[in-house]
Image 1 (tube, rainbow, N blue to C red):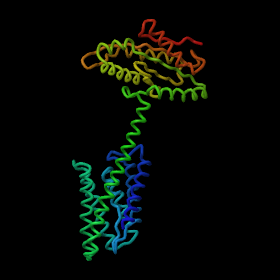
Image 2: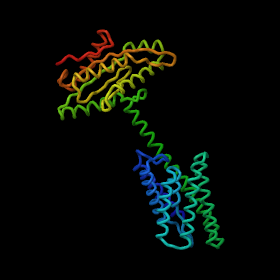
Image 3: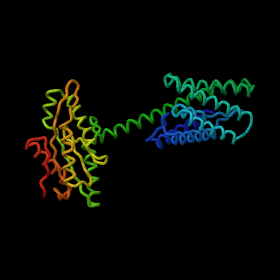
Image 4: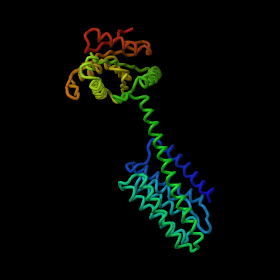
Length: 358
């Protein structure tokens, strides 16, 4: 019996791991699209049928963990996937045999589904919900099996064994699913943080560098133009010294929002470090890049930056370079834009300077 129980739990955990890998990007929730709920509901029903195949034989009774996938989809997905899983499990059981034990197991599945849906919506803790759902399943099973079997000796170890198996399988399934989802969320978070500036939500320098190198190949292959705006906040140190670094961070965040509003959806906007930002404009001429830079400069100049207790105004200096018009070698684009930025800062600030054509 224990060997068969181990097999049941192993199959359950293995298929849960497979499911999590397949739905890594979009785990099931009560707010998931209907299509996803249908897919997961069907998957839960199939998993229940697979677990029925590995049923544990105890005298004249067959027990398994088919109800665990049903509880999972009801708990996380709500009514639709739960009903789909329930129907598939019922059909699978009827396919095995149509008899009194089959009808009683159907009654058990229906009641467990209802209890899972009701308890999942309560304000109880997650562990308590799981415990009560499994306890209800064990209670109904005990009543049903007691009405079918009249051998006290068999009931004496059948009911405790089923209850223990149900609790163990249920808590292991929820634990494994929770650990897998937590690890996936952490992986996504760390992956995002490795490419995204935490303060502004823009690309960080690492991601800028990767995207620039990818664009280089595309631009050369398609014989396109590529423009780069290099942007720096004027006298940003004075903002930090006067209002504090927390307020300086707020200026950076609001500037990031301005850059997004002033740029096209496919432009690549990055915070390259400190108060320096860049905008990569694919297939943009020098004229278009200059216009984009002026739009940003004017927008920043007119914007009143809302701090905690103050409104302040800041300006930016922008350097512009364009591959094929100011820069013959695309790998010099960053350097040329950077040089033109320093020209803007050294000749008065709050202005746009164009790289000297080579």
